[in-house]
Image 1 (cartoon, rainbow, N blue to C red):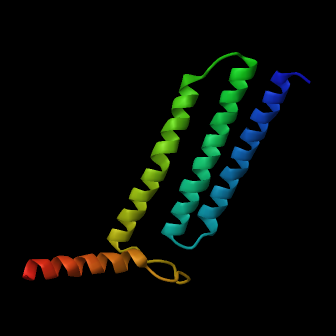
Image 2 (cartoon, rainbow, N blue to C red; image 1 turned 60 degrees about the vertical axis):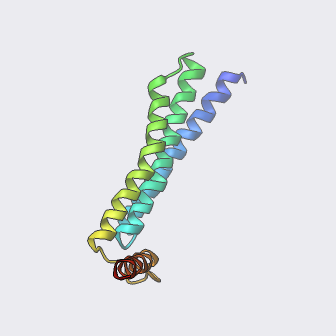
Length: 127
C-alpha cells in the first residue's frame, strides 16, 4: 500500500464522515423543538459536515491529481468564518424579535441580562 492509497482512504473517510454529519444536522433541524436549538444543529453540525467534505476533497486532489485547490481552501476558510457568525446573528435577531423558547427550556439568561442592563441604563439616566 503506497502513500497515495492511504491518503485516498483518509479523504474518503473524511467525505463519508461529512455526509453523516449532514444527515445528523438534517435530523436535528427536524427533531429539535425551537428556533434556537435548530440553529445550533444547523450551524455546528452542518459547518463541520461541510468542512470535513471540503477537506476530504482537498486531500484527494492534492494526493491523486497533484493539484492544490485554492478554491477548496477558500471554501473551507469562508465556511469556517461565516457559518457560526451567521447563526449567532440569526439567533440574536430571533431573540430580540421575541421568539419564545421551547417549553422544556430551563431559563432565558440573555433576557435576564438584557433586563438588568436596561435597569442600569435607566438608573444612570435618572441620576
